[in-house]
Structure formats: structure tokens, C-alpha cells
Image (tube, rainbow, N blue to C red; front, top):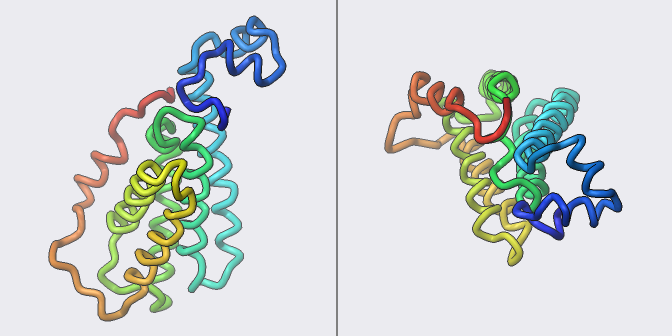
Length: 184
């Protein structure tokens, strides 16, 4: 599907997979259902990989997790019509944000992350990764890694100061809980 792109027809996908179109349609009657299932798989794999983050020293946990997010965004970009997080279920998104909040708190307690870093700042780093992946698609597919390096360096800077307060919990909740673009 990566070669075909997210707008490929079901017939094209079936042909590339070596399936009869009817076999694909039996399992996924619409492209939306196929994309939703793929987004679910990407989200579940992200959470599975995220658990390995906890085996690392605390100073590497958030960076490793964000790198894993970036890899998943880059891999899914050419397959899904929207970022997989937008297509995830509410429960999946809440699990990712809860896990991220845990890593953030541990990093701050250990003095690895600047004290003023908020969950919404981590969310903004991910939103930035999504933009870099989309803009550099097909030209510089690993540019997101440089963006992440710059962002993480800032998050770890103890002298970090912000010109604006973090996105409040209510507004972040509205972003997290907005309806998804394809999952049930």
C-alpha cells in the first residue's frame, strides 16, 4: 500500500496483495473500514512499542517514545489518508496521552525535563512531527528526526522559558476528545 498511496482503490490494493477483489471486499467492504483497521493496528503497535520505553533509563524514555511516534507517523503517512492518531478510537488516544503524561512526570521528577514542560507541549511536538512528515514526504523522509532532535533538546533545557502558558487541560482535552476521522 505504501507504493500505491492512501487514495488507492480497493481493486488496486487487492491486485498488489495478490487477492481477488471479492476477498478484500468481504473483509473490508469500504476503503474507510480498511483504513480504520490499519490505523488501529498502527495505534496498537505504538502502544506495544511504548511499553519498552519503560525499560530504558528515565533520561531516554520520552525521547525514545517520541522517536517511536515519529517512526509510526512516517510509516503510516503513505498508507493512511489521515495521521493514524486522528483515526484512532478515543480509548486508544486516551491511553497514549496517559502514557505520555506518565513519561513527562517521571522525566520532570528526575530533572531530565525542564520543570515548565507540560503535556500540551509534548502534544505540540507530535503535531509538529506530523507536519514535518507531511511537508517533506517523498523529498526528505527522515527530516522529522532532525525536528525531533531540536524539540527534545529544548524540552531538556533547564533554562527553558516560554513566552506563552501551556495549552490548558480543558483545551487539550477538547483536542484529545474530538471525534476521530475514521475509527469507531
